[in-house]
Image (cartoon, rainbow, N blue to C red; front, side, top):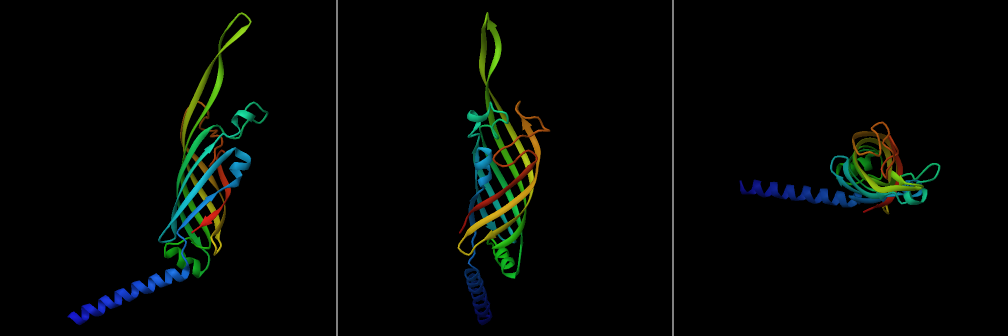
Amino acid sequence: MKKFVIIILIFLLSATQLKAQEQDTLLLKRHAVTTSPLPILFGGAFLATYEHAMPWRSSIELELGAQGFYWKKYRGGVFGAPTRPGIVATAGYKFYLPLGKVNKKIALAGGIPYNSFFLKTRLTYVHQWSSYDVYVGNNGWDIITQHYTFHENDLFLAFILGYQFVSKQGFVIAPFMGYNLPLYISGPIHPADFPGSSAAYIGFATMGLKIGWAF
């Protein structure tokens, strides 16, 4: 009986070591930090993404950002500023569709695959505000205004399809696009049928090109 138990323990220890050696051989990258240059260039916004890989071809993504950098400068223009001042936070679940046997092994072992399509669901929370001088009356020829700041809280659900490439050194590039569904809009800035734009979406669409580093 003792010999049998010893044999079983030796077998389990060997299997564990072989699995660890296999993961080391695959050079698993379990974390990635990325951002998309499109909101910075065209939206007056910034959104940073942290990804943590999980077993069975999946990962979680958390994002945090700010917006409305051009609000004061362009709000009075013909097209206005692309985003209002605010903060953005998202939480997403990404399911990988890895390409090739090696990438499948990496994804199943809890790493970020080098080449893979992915499906992603994402919850986005936006808190934004706008300030205006509102007319309240006049004193003769003098117009009297009062400064008001309006706040809004928004919650959206997005369904995203994308492709992600990770080099062996860790460089990440991931184009993506999807549909952005308003769940809750509370405030006077946007109606339900016109959600506006933020660091994470453009109306009912969400798209971008994430670049960054995996490790």
